[in-house]
Amino acid sequence: MLSFDHALLGALASFLPARHHRKFHAMWPSLPIEFLVVGTPVSLQSGNSQARAAWRRLVLQAAEAALLDAENQIGAKLWAFHEWPRLSFTMLYFPASPMEGDIDNIVKLTMDALVPRVYTDDAIVDRVLVQRFNVRDAAAFVAPSDVLLRAMAVEDPVLYIRIDEVSTVGVSL
Image (cartoon, rainbow, N blue to C red; front, side):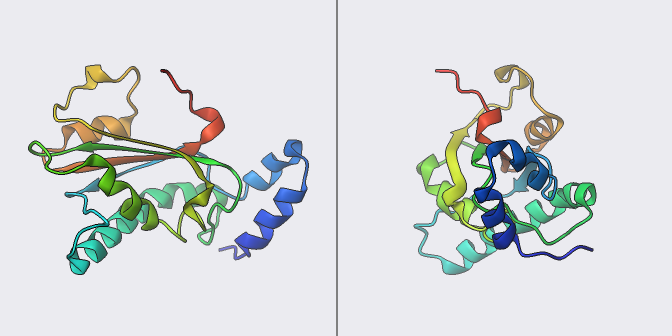
């Protein structure tokens, strides 16, 4: 396995003209990275510190499982996005029953669970999309990925997470 200092690589890449960033990007897995977290998300505002810690572990375990394939692409396990690329973070929540509480309360704890494993600081995330779907209907999506289709097939509460480069994600308003 390769071992290298991601902060140093990120700093080096930041000094290069944009046309050279792709050479450094080869040291990180290709995007998007998609995975599922089966369970009911916990709010950062929850007074139950054990539930918050358990949710963070669950998110990290789901990410680790999904990252095995990505890490095989680059032949390295020790990596994390740092400063570049700018990221988009999508969370689609499919509850088993109508959700109580605000959907925005699940964002911070879920994103923080991936520091420093997926990114060194969630400040590199420029776009966050979070949505609750009380009905699991593939027709609601134009071209759902296999991972998203799996999320809709799970009967338990499940959170679909997709991390992508901001520049590759369009916005339709």
